[in-house]
Each structure stands twice: as structure tokens, then as C-alpha cells.
Length: 268
Length: 261
Image 1 (cartoon, rainbow over the protein chains, first blue to last red):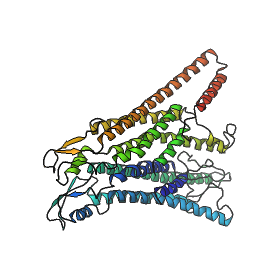
Image 2: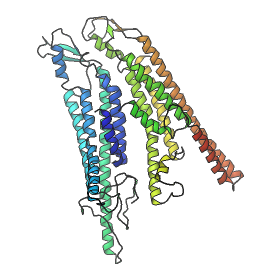
Image 3: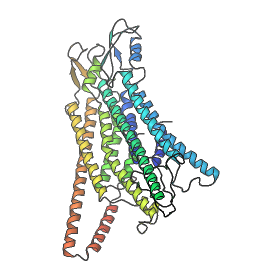
Image 4: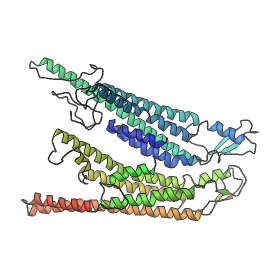
């Protein structure tokens, strides 16, 4: 098991993402995962070997290193990447469950192949919220553990068995600081993308619900009857799964509007 | 995730690039990424271990190394390659969006005469015109900016492209001005010059591609204007014939060795 496994799993999420979701995937793969693997990992490779304290007291270096770096920054970075990528798997699992149900019942559970229930929309929304939560959580943890995002070149240590307050020198502090700032900036970019996607999805849902309610009012005030079928917001529990960013917002007075989360299907 | 994954993504863009773009992709992956992975990592592997200062003062070596190498050469090259390859993803995303739109229209029944089925849409080579031309040109422009920026940062950080064999360091806690010796300075200088040359070649290819695209557009527009002014009735037929010819000549330059599209 390696990063390839995560990459392959996440590639499957691509199909069910919105446009902003795909940009998020690109940022995570190229600017975080790739940079981690080809560059950042090597910077921290010899961090303990090159950590030097101004004392010949055996054990002093070990104790001081352990005190300043309870968990290595690069390991925290890797954990953050894994935790932030995992909520997207909820969406994949939901789709797999839905397809399994269809096979078991040996019939289409929904009116048309492209329509999914609002459950997937909620799953996607929850995965977005959890992702954002993890991002912010890890950033706060980073800040609290290392007193900021910078790496100093010198730290003073007076823990036993060090005989007095000794100077301890960290290896490659500038390079480490540069990569940590890179991590923070890409993390913030991902948070902004998640918030944008969240607002966009919620806003689209409100607009659709509002338009449906408006059409309902219009229908009740008009004498002629058309065969109008629609899904009410909150009627079946959730709105239809929202489409791509370039889908139309107006409802059709025709067979059920097909909504799919950035699929490749029919129009509104 | 490694360079292979990036190669897979950028290789996909290869299909929609111009001939110069295909040469650029080849140069990037063979002369820069491969050299970085195969050779540069070996040469810079022991850079801090074998960086030696003429003092027993603990911490002096760390501090001096950090001062002279704020970012290692190979990390800077890795970042440069990532940033320089990324604008090509804009083109890939634009092509994917265009295909998605075409498939949507096909399902609605709008483009049935142009394509036989959805697979046909996916196999079609997308021509560099209209909004894709702007995306492609912007991606080349950003590539040039990133290349130049990284080359300048390199020059600024290391005061040139040559590595000396000895450096003088007097930063605290070093007790006085000590001599510090870099490991394998000549080999590192050779690789640095190689990577900088490859960078310059890539930049020249990008500039050439940009000029080629601009000239193509100007040439097309002037031909169209000429055709409209001299033969208004035959304009459509001639344009179609010209476009066919261009399509044939573009697809004929498809064979760049070693690169699956």
C-alpha cells in the first residue's frame, strides 16, 4: 500500500465531483501529494541525525529532539493528506451502495438512470464539511504544536540529562520553513475551494427550491392543467442531486428534470 | 504519486498540442525529469552529510549549511518542473470541458451529423482555435513566466550557477571565520549547467510556440479577409479546403518518438 492506492481511489471520485471539486482534486494531487513525495519527504529525511546539541552528554540530543518534535512535521503533513482525502470516499461508497441496491432489486429504483436521490447530495455536502474541518483542524494543530509555521535554526533545551541550558541546532531550518509555508498556502487554497463549492451547492439548491415553489404557485393560480411532475424540496427528503455548474436553473414543465452531480447525461 | 503520474497527465495533453509543444514535452520529461530522478538525486544525496566545516563547534555546520543552501538545488528543480508542467493541465481541463459539452449536445440530438457516437467525440482531436487557443496561449505564457522566475530565483539564491569548493562562514555559533567544504562541487556545477541549459531550451521552445500560434492566427485572418474581398462566393469552399489541409498537416506531425499520446 502506498500513495498510489490513494491516488487510484480518489481518481474514482472525479466522476461524481463538481467542477470546483475537480480543481480541488488537481490541487491536492499536484501541489500537495506530488510536492510531498518528490521534494518535502527528502528534506526531513535526516532530521534527527543532523540535529545537534552543544553538549557531549549522552541522551541530551535524544531528549531535546523528542521534546521539540513530538511528531515530525512531514508525518503530520502525510496524516493531513490522508485525512483530507478520505471523506471523498464517502461519495464513492454511496454510489457503490446505490448501484448494489439497483442490482439486488433488479430494477431501476428511480425514474430515470441519471436521477439520484438527494441522499448523494447530502453525502457530498457532508464530505465537504468534514474535509474542511480536517484541513482547519490540522492547520490549528500544526500552529499549536510548533508555535507557528516557522522553523528556528536554534532552540534552547534544559531537560534532563542535559547539564544546563544547551543550544540545539536544527538541520535545514530555512528549507523546512519554505515547505511548511507551501503546505499552509495549499491548505488554505483547498479550504477556500471547499467553502466555494459548499456555498455554490447550497445556493443552487435554494434557487431550485424557490423556482419550484414559484412554479407551483403559478400552476395553482392558472386554470389549465399541464402534466407537471417535479420533486419538492424536502418532499422526498432532499432535492434532486445538483448538476454541473453550467446547467440551467429553470425547471421544465416536462418529464422529471434529470440532475446528476457532474455526470455526462441529459440536459435540464 | 510521482513523476510517472504527472507524465500520464501531461502525456494526455500531448494529443492536442502543436508539434513544438510535443517537442517541449519530450525535452521536459527526458532531459529534465529523468536526469533529475536518475542522476541529480545521487549527486545531491549526501549533500549535508558530506558538508564539512573546519571546526568542532557543534551547530556551526548546520548553521552554515542552512545559510548557503536555503533551498536545495534538487528541490528547487522539482518545484520548477511541477510549476512549469501545471499550465498544461489548464488545457487538459478545457478539452475535457469541451468534450463534456459536445457529448451533452450530442445526447440532445444537436450534433448527430458531426459524430457517429459518443466514443467518436472522445477520440476526436480538438483543434486549437477559439477559446482553446486562448487557454493554450495563456498556458504557454505562464510556462515562460515560471521558467524565467525559477531561473532568476536560482541565480539570486546561489549568486550564479557555479558552486565553489570552499565557503567562508562566520555565523554564530561558529567561533570565527571557518572554512566550509561542499561535497562534489564540480559534478554539481556540471548538472546545474545542464539543467539550466535544458531550462533555456524549454523557454526558447515556448517562445517559438507562442510566435507560431500568433502567426498562424494572423495568417488565417489575412487569408480570410483576402478570400472575402476577392471571391465572396467561393470563400466558404476555400476555407473548408484550407482547414482540411491544415488538419492533415497538423496530424501528420504527430510522430514524436517515445511519447504515447
